[in-house]
Image (cartoon, rainbow, N blue to C red; front, side, top):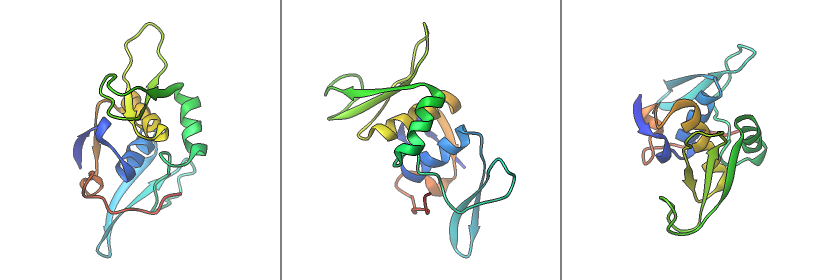
Length: 140
């Protein structure tokens, strides 16, 4: 396991972190020369290898928006840490500072906002999921 800034998460590493934020029990395994992830859903029956596609499927992203009350919107170039055409997402907090997440895709920005809200600015992920070292896993 390695620690990485939540804002740098992408692909399977981001999906792993969102599933952890959702409270799923995840198990990285190495089998037959390949890394994989198995998880245990609410019914307690192990299932995998796959990671839920929160960052590409609006059905999954929409559920996160409602559950965590995430606000999203377009960001103009040069605002905050945004670079180019970006989307910003943030948890809705009354009278509290908020953490903004930026990404080229609004679904990715939402996922990052959820991870930062629940797990914090730094998260632990399996080293094989680190950005730049990723091997795609099957997504559902």
